[in-house]
Image (cartoon, rainbow, N blue to C red; front, side):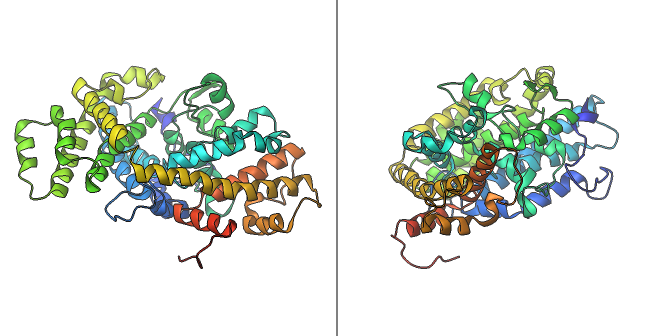
Length: 451
């Protein structure tokens, strides 16, 4: 089973043996870190948009920290699998850690500017009745890629198609286990919309990447039918690493900008810290040192708890019969994560400046999409009268993103591709650049863009 699950096959290109000096999974780590999409995460929000405090986390620093936690989880689980005699002979526990590390590095690589607010803004624009005409030509099964837009699916597209030159180059050409370990919701947007109406409609790949997705999950032995696809077991570790980090790091950032106190942070984690460790926390000379010390202790405790839960519920994890690993941890670990999230919801995510900037994000996206989507639409339907000068200039800005020279079977396919190209362009922007372009489009620009 694990011989299939850890098959180092790639979508395109040369296959590297696992026993080489540098494993294919370690190569994946490097490919992600050196990619332009990963580099742009340094200017995308984690929690606090356009923050001036350099101590706060960006999407990049968050992803790097998640990858460190993920590597520890993966190596620990790899050791557990080796003890059971289930690892293939050419796979070592450290290689399992590299797979999880790489997947963690890429887990947010498709996030648009302003994070979850950006996702909501894109969905909201396409759901607005005034913009309904732009979706009329599309089949309902693909409309939901826009009305339910999700950064997870965009990330899958980035790593499998967009990076390294274009949509037909294989993206970063990562190994199948790394790609599959990123996938938390192995369904289409249409199925997610139908199955979870009124709830979270998360999904992990666009229709444009359906064939790549099915190929990967079939080769890894995770696809019974196209409607019955299991998550890769290591994806639970990627999810857990993300949960651990944001439940701890979001409070560290909040303490840095004085939204919560150090005592409030300590109270949240008190039940998983021994008295002597709490005493050591209180001995630290500054608030920043105290919170950093708490972070290290808590992450270590949660990592150990997740590894124990994976081993305890191993059979259920392999079968895909669990929702997540954190919920299966011991009571103290679960309570600590739940309490941390509750404190963040109450005092961090609703903070006034953050809320104001997120409202502003809707205006940014509205300004961008009000120009780019009509430009794409009129270029496809070829209505020369309606391709105003503004839209023709917008098409020049989009450039190759619309893939104008591709061959399509139907006008609907061409329109879908054009819209996806717009989303590629807009979601790839950083927070500050998206704001700058929107200002220029609205005539409120304040000067030349500073790199």
